[in-house]
Image 1 (cartoon, each protein chain N blue to C red):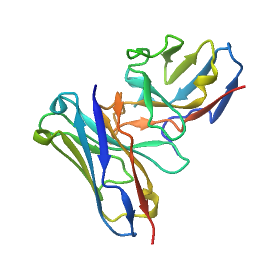
Image 2: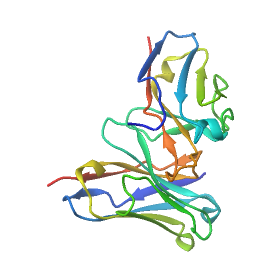
Image 3: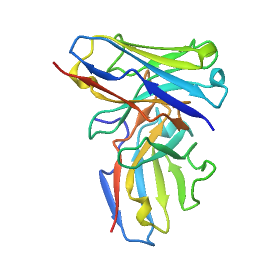
Image 4: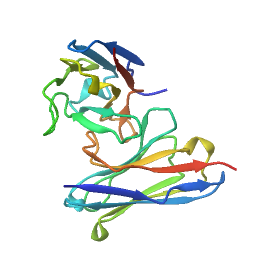
Length: 117
Length: 111
């Protein structure tokens, strides 16, 4: 059974940085595209980034985070990362790690990021 | 504002069928058969219920079905049950610079 476990969320001041991690197990991690999807409180879903399988050579970002967030992966550790810099209040959300993209067929439980002074 | 348009809310009685629409453009829904649907219960992560327009993952009830016509995709839930009460989101691959697009979500209430 595949499992995705996010970590690294927390409270950060505007302009600060945070690094999210996602530990994958139960499937061949390197074979799958991986994505980060966020959900602001009471709002809908937004895919903020995805990264291709194996080499991770194909990366896409949502306009709202491009230039501030960086997605990466370590296939040897079966882990996905999201480096978030220059955080703003609008980045406050639950961040989910998900396997694949279009469709996202497995999701983690999410980690809450709160940007506030 | 979400890239895909869904009704904000829908309701139905047990046993009825309901259909949730999801409208996009030729750059997403209309151009590709990579439409997926997700069910999200309060406080939980979304769950994939339909992939590639009309495929049900293993374990998903046959009461859930998907379709697409032009730039609009649809999710139909037949034989509505109390347990179907949840938020439903559509998503699609997009040829734009975005990684994927979602609808704003539809809150389904079972009366």
